[in-house]
Amino acid sequence: MQRILESAAFRNTHSLQQLLQFLVAQADGPDTKALKEYTIGVKVFSRPPDFDPKIDPIVRVQTHRLRQKLRDYYDTEGRHDPILIGIPKGHYLPVFQSKIQAEPSTAAAIPRLAAWPKPKPIGRKSKLLIALALVLCLVGAGIWSIHRWSRASVRTADVSSVIDKFWGPFFADNSSLVIYSNALFVGDSTNGLRYAPPANDANHAGNVVYVDTYTGIGELNSVYEFTRLFDSHHATFTLKRSLLVTWDEAKQRNLIFIGSVAENPALRVMPANMDFTLMAGKGFSGIVNHNPHPGELALYSRPEHPLTKDYAIIALLPGLEPKRKILVFSGLMTLGTQAAVEFACRPESLEQLLRSATSPGGTIRPFEAVIETAIGGDVPLQSRLVAIHVH
Image (cartoon, rainbow, N blue to C red):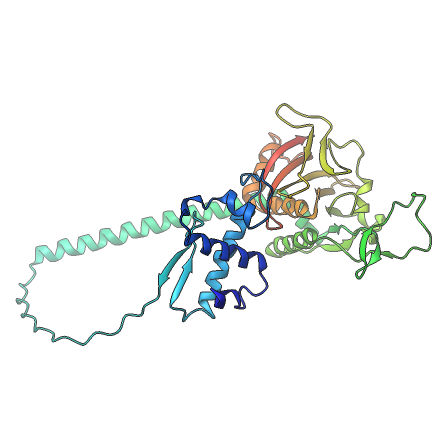
């Protein structure tokens, strides 16, 4: 155990070290059936007594990471360890396996095999039947291959069709401008940064030094997603941080906004009558639904502690000039923004938006949508569409 904990794979993973030690200790205990997800969350990850594993997936996420780290260890430093520790999927109780190498046994005398009887000559009728069977096999294999290839081709065409239908205008003539969050901060990296007060705030001193060179990790991952998407369609885009955008340039382009209004000042030119808006107050943040449809909530709010889910807006709006379009991806947090971008870049989830937003004539109408994403290990895990308003 100590060799594993001190290995390169586990050296800087304190939470995984604690988890492994706890699970191994429980495996030697008298009541292994008591090893439940709730128990691990409370005792290892210091979750409160009202911890609900269905809402907070911390145990499942960290156990998945632990399995990966164990595989990494046994593929490198631990490849010669005599005992292997594993955690089967769907379980938390470790299993221990002895790695005993079988020694080569002394070669025994090999009995001489009796000679096979001499085969009888194959008649002409049998040869014809064999040839016919071979032909039928080849024809069947060819038909199966063509059918499989055609199905794969259709699926590939469907995927390309979904992406091209939605993103085609943004691929065209390399005219898209991607504008990412670029909030103003005060302070420094040594003493800490905090959001700068609004320009009209009474405390907005003129001699304050502002920092405008930071953005969120979700925005960074979003730019990476767009780069992959545009590269795969041999298209390019221009990338600018929000504070550097000039509207003389922007109005001639298709625009893609990444980030919330609070951190992406350029978004403040958006129409004030949108159905969904982001709102933050003391101890809460959420997306306000100003026009709830049947079955929708008036407020989509996320939990503050622990952060187990986030919400984001995806909006397709008319551009600043005719024939131009605007896309908005705004999460309550940076992870929500990332989840929204990934949702629109994946054909399977993008198809959900298209089904609701496409008119009978095949045109994609402007829309606003809200997605909910589960958060685990500080990454967006799974997202779903919870509301969409088509205009």
